[in-house]
Length: 182
Image (cartoon, rainbow, N blue to C red; front, side, top):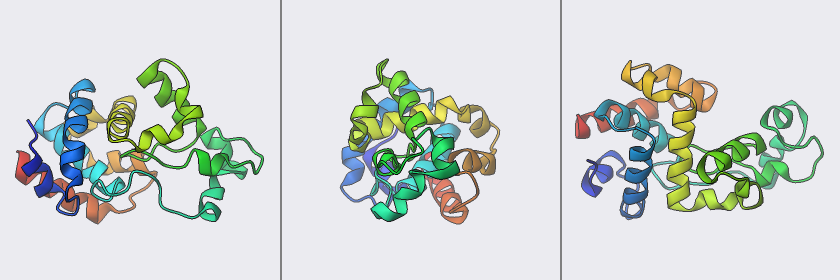
C-alpha cells in the first residue's frame, strides 16, 4: 500500500512528520474504504492541502480570527452557541481535513467513539491517529469515495472547503499523488 517514501514524495514539506503519520493514515484509509489508488490519490491531495502537507493539524489564526466562528450566522451554521463564549476557538478546525464547529465535532465523535468526548476534548484531533481518523470519517460521511471514483475533484474540493480555495495546490498534490501511486 502506501510507504513512507511515497508519502514523502507526495508531501515533500512533511519531513519527519511523514513517518509519524504513515501508520495512522494507512489505518484510517483502510477503515473508511479509501482503498483504491484513485481514492487514495484524491484523499491525499485534499488532506495535503488542508494540513499544509501534514504540518498543520490545527487551524491557523489568532483568537480574534477564530472568533468569527463564535457569533452570528456562521456560528449558528456550525452549531456553536450564539454568545461570545469561546466556542469559535474551542471548535476551530482540527485534524487533517480541519473538522470545524460543534456540530461537526459532535458527529465526528459519535462516529469515532460512540459518544461525545470530542466536545470536551477537541484537542484529541491534534493527535496523528485522530487527525487521520477524523479526516477519513469526514471523507466517508460526505460520500467522497464515489466522487473520487468519478474524478470529480472540484466537487470534492467544494464539499471539503466550501469553495475552490487552494485549487492550484490541491491539483499539484493530486498530480504528484497519481504519479507516485498510480
